[in-house]
Length: 137
Image (cartoon, rainbow, N blue to C red; front, side, top):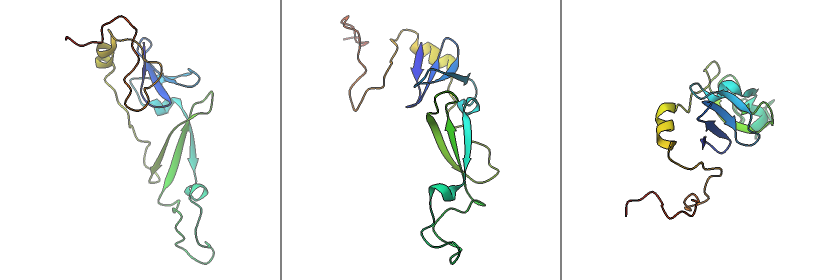
């Protein structure tokens, strides 16, 4: 059973591995940070947020100072899909932003059908036409 986590990330509950939703590459154990299985690009923030004023004339030019800010981009090692981006102070470790209780997730999903695509808008996930929608009425 595979469970969608983000737009680009899912968990295979049988193998307990994070996977890329685009190419299916197994990344890392779902019991640790998914970022450990990704490629990381440490970007100079001035590449993304270009100075609005001439840096040779103005020390403060509305562009992030790389001594104060770094941008980490995380990519799937096989297909190159960008999975996450984070702004951090230099020297700060990557954030551990998703930590799931895998055992509880397995219990929660044991009797459910696999959801292959996230619903759009307020539409509920599509169910098989067997008449039971999970309610007791």
